[in-house]
Image (cartoon, rainbow, N blue to C red):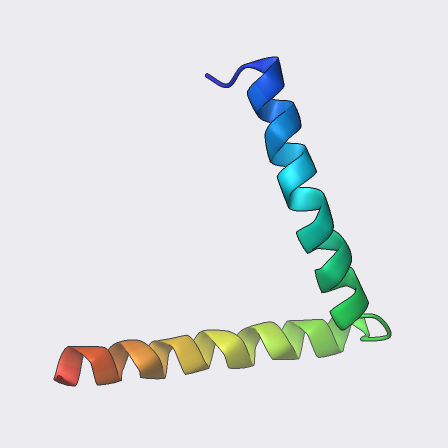
Length: 54
């Protein structure tokens, strides 16, 4: 369980990151964001495969 103070701290910590991510992805359509997400997941899968091979 998180205290109210802990929750406030987390929100304050997240806010700058959320603003930065919003700026980075500004102008992307929902479909473009979906495509990006799928590409990123594929890249992560490849990274995992490479890690396992080592």
